[in-house]
Amino acid sequence: MKTYRIASIPGDGIGKEVVPEGEKVLQALAAKNQDIQFEFQHFDWGGDYYRAHGVMMPADGLDPLRKVDAILFGSAGDPNIPDHITLWGLRLKICQGFDQYANVRPTRILPGIQTPLKNCTRDQLDWVIVRENSEGEYAGLGGRAHQGHPIEVASDMSILTRVGVERIQRYAFRLAQSRPRKHLTVITKSNAQRHGMVMWDEIAVQIAKEFPDVTWDKELVDAATARMVNRPESLDTVVATNLHADVLSDLAAALAGSLGIAPTGNIDPERRYPSMFEPIHGSAFDIMGKGLANPIGTFWSIVMMLEHLQEPTLAKLLMQVIEQVTANPSLHTRDLGGKAMMTEVTQAVCAGIERS
Ligand code: NAD
Ligand code: MN
Image 1: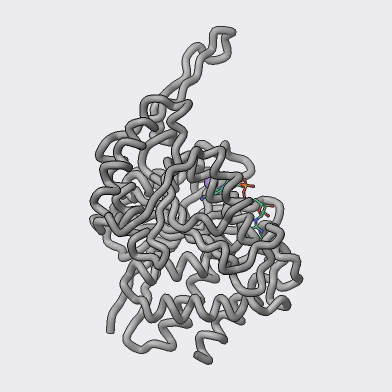
Image 2: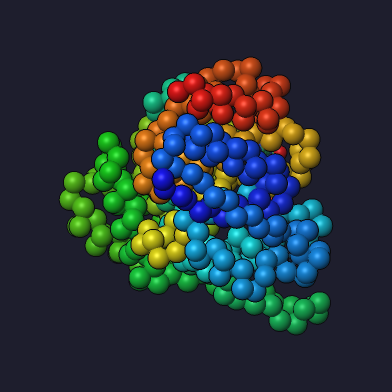
């Protein structure tokens, strides 16, 4: 019997609703497979914790997480706390503390889901966006001075290190190599950002030489948005800096049908630390507490978690069941134009696992 220790951090808003649903799905998989069990450790960090303790998570909070096999995360974001506090105090603290430098975001149009793109068939949109997750525009460097005075100044400094760029691009080339198309698009903005992005471009040329069987091209980030809409089939694996990929991946999620479906993994490819899996959506203040949240983004994130735990059979099984469920419009939540409640979707997925 293999036991996986999973840290469960629901966070805020609908994170508190979808993460428990994710745990149910993992329990259903364990019930089906007697060789495996999941042991959850729950952490009540987030906005409520902040109101009680003045911090989003304890200063030594990374210590108990160090021992787990993976982290299942919901969302950080509270209507009454500034977003930069919730984000930096919890999610980024974990991502940066555990040097989860590869943020991986698969995008596909699942069966039964409508894309807003006219004339785009399911096989024409199959992407994985690799986001640099440790530096760039979100390195946290910069500051403010003269606050409240007319001469007030504020700066955010983007930093790219050679090590940081090499490792994320190498990760992306390797991922591209593992996919049937073996194609990578390197997103840049070296026309306007004439230091860091120029180094980024130079490093791409260098890393590409290690992967002679991968074809690659380069696209400016603004042009990339148009290409995603107009020629989705021309893209496969994509690598971009932290901010660029943040923006592109929300666009990708919308083109694939809904923010409520899209998954992500914050991965430490060297496995020095646990990796963290989460739906890409936020706390969704407008629907929280109503049972309307789409849990599919969390379930697909669990598929990524199972792949990372090297349980490919379970990952494949769960993805098949998810696709059976999305194929049925009566199991669509409101974000997909349906009437199903979150718990009905979970029940259908758990029943599908049991039947499999
Ligand atoms: P959001 O993702 O919370 O919501 C955007 C829209 O999408 C809303 O209309 C929402 O109802 C809808 N939506 C999102 N997920 C859904 C789901 N699973 N099912 C159905 N509908 C869904 O983004 P936002 O409004 O920009 O941010 C709200 C808060 O969440 C902010 O505090 C923000 O900082 C935070 N946030 C956190 C994360 C994170 O922790 N990873 C990511 C994004 C936003
Ligand atoms: Mn984002």
